[in-house]
Image 1 (cartoon, helix red, strand yellow):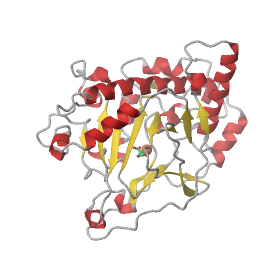
Image 2 (cartoon, rainbow, N blue to C red; image 1 turned 90 degrees about the horizontal axis):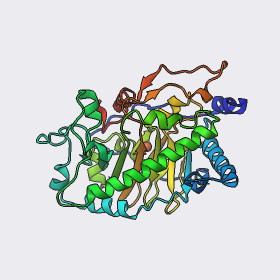
Image 3 (tube, protein in one colour; image 1 turned 60 degrees about the vertical axis):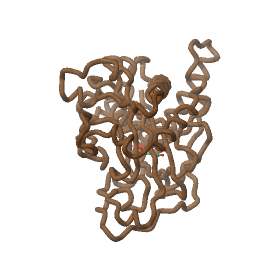
Image 4 (cartoon, rainbow, N blue to C red; image 1 turned 90 degrees about the vertical axis):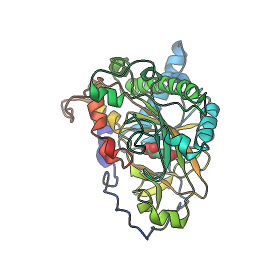
Length: 369
Ligand SMILES: O=C(O)CCC(=O)C(=O)O
Ligand SMILES: [Fe+2]
């Protein structure tokens, strides 16, 4: 059960209003680029190796519980809502090389992978490549490899969200590398979720595992590239992010957990103590933040934290993995986060319809809602 200090923390949290509508971009004006104030955010660093052991003895169990509590403490409403994980055992070199090689392909080759929204000849509607005109960064979305290995689902709404990530003939190993990384990140994400359930005191230790297992998880592996724009290009940009002088506008992620390789350049910021501060860069580590889906599932005990990316003086590649549940995963408040004095705030739903209802919050996804 929840102890009262969790509830107190939640009422103390200060934050900017969620999703303030971005100013609309104008044609001959670009606002000044947002610069770092030099302030570094306090983001806990957590060694997650105790969460990843195939078997545990009593001493390992104690270390597991300690690490699980650290994850929860870093994610509670009123805390950073962001943390860095080390000793996670995932090698990032192949995915980093694949992202750099993909973005270096000619524009036409990348556009082959764009959905119909950006390429009228495309038969794809949801996943794939988005050019920098979408919202100031180009991106490639990879999906659960299982979606490529089977025919589309009979239900149109489910088939839409389960559309497979796409491969490109110029890079024969791209899908292989993305699939392998997707599987490793999915496993890491599920280990983190199991630990979070444990840290919250949930008696059903398989709470998330059971919910995800009703189908194939929809987690999205994304390659982002933020080009280095000239002032002239920025003045013509229709990106909501550019309209605020940012590489990526302030937002909360809406999936379950984001596990981010933020690249070499820095620039990620979170809103802490009433100001925007830089998230420290730790080579080889991942930055994790809670998504709106986990906030909902934990009855606002854990909170999705607002973040943004400022423009840096170099092009920037980042690789977020958005851990997502399956289309039919039931989302009702986790029992450990509900009490008589804290009833469940959210109506039961399922993950597919929930996540689709959030697309309108993101310029690059709004037309796919
Ligand atoms: O590029 C980054 O470091 C973060 C991007 C981000 O916040 C997102 O894609 O949701
Ligand atoms: Fe984000």
